[in-house]
Image (spheres, rainbow, N blue to C red):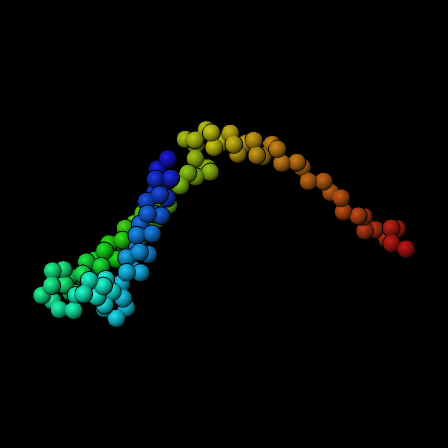
Length: 113
């Protein structure tokens, strides 16, 4: 259950990070130039919008990294003794796999003429 929650959070943060990065302009214009912010006297001017996008990008990137690490610890392990359902599933898989038969042709001197 917690692993599924981590996956949903990772997807949400990844999409938000992509959107924040796409809004930014590599030359510094980005979202601030869309609102006519050429001067620093306007409300929410160029500098404050760039600071917000920069901080949001770093926050989302760090939170994505932390969520991925936490999700790694939440992955159910196959050798877990605390999960009998997983153990039963593994036992059923092992019993339903048929034994491999040896159908290779004989390679003796008598069979090659």
